[in-house]
Image 1 (tube, rainbow, N blue to C red):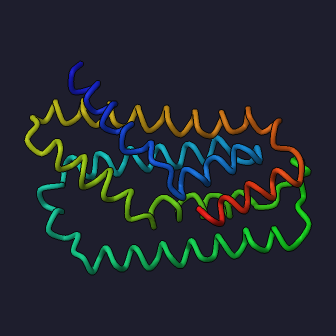
Image 2 (image 1 turned 45 degrees about the vertical axis):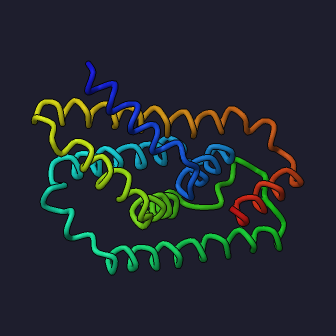
Length: 188
């Protein structure tokens, strides 16, 4: 139970930082679009990366060189520039607040979710390297329980984030509010 709680608290402390992925989950919740699939992709990806880090950290720690990190940062930068471009375009053109018509298809939302997840260097530093390093001296069963705790925190966090945003979306219905939200997302 100790390792489960340790994994839960450690995982939660790492995921609470608001980054591009979390902003995207919030935005999908506010739009009430594909929330389940977005939350599921984010949580399952964390699950995979957590256990990947826990079990192969000792072998993988020398592979993540500054040049690999630079490549991931460049890819994320390009991805974020495109995301910001789309946000700016939505400011220029009239916002469509009709939730019955989705602006993006499921495949586009899945691609964006995967991009925000796997192009983000922080997901690797947190899930693979931090949690992997933290648990490197644990016994096998302790690693599994620790990883489950961290994964549970990820599942709970993403689903609360997505569905709490959906719940609060009733307060964000006007074009003026969405304009402020988009400007804050662009600035962030």
